[in-house]
Image (cartoon, rainbow, N blue to C red):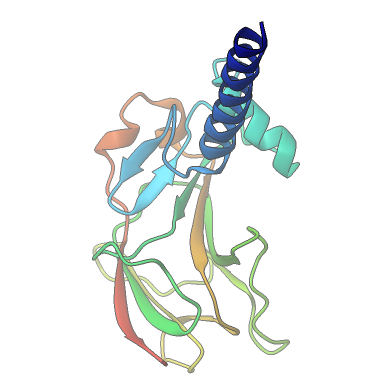
Length: 194
């Protein structure tokens, strides 16, 4: 009798702990169900639609984020550079390459809690498409780091893990099925302090 009760207790514990761990992993994984990855950038195109998977809906409810609908835009997040290394606030990066067509887009650096990294009062903490210098082919080069840089510069401060958030508003890529066919800028590590 005791052996049967102990066996049932162990099975229930394994099921509850295993189920809880798998849900925690899916809610915190950057690349999970419904994700589209392009280079180092990941997006969830279905997140603001009725077709969103249950994990995406739970992630949005937990984080309290207002998701963009399919016709409104699309957000890409990058947590690693072009070599696969974790993005760090102590490092400098060059975000370089083409951007898909959009009426308006923004880029900013976020900390480990997904909050925007405030640089200082003299520099904005985010850049947008109307203020950026562009190359003749409409691609961009953005220098990201603590030290000022000529051209497009996104200031960083502090230390620890970070990510880049690139959001396109009123863009045809959000409503098309060819999201995976677009090109996004590459994130190149330009050196680290320590």
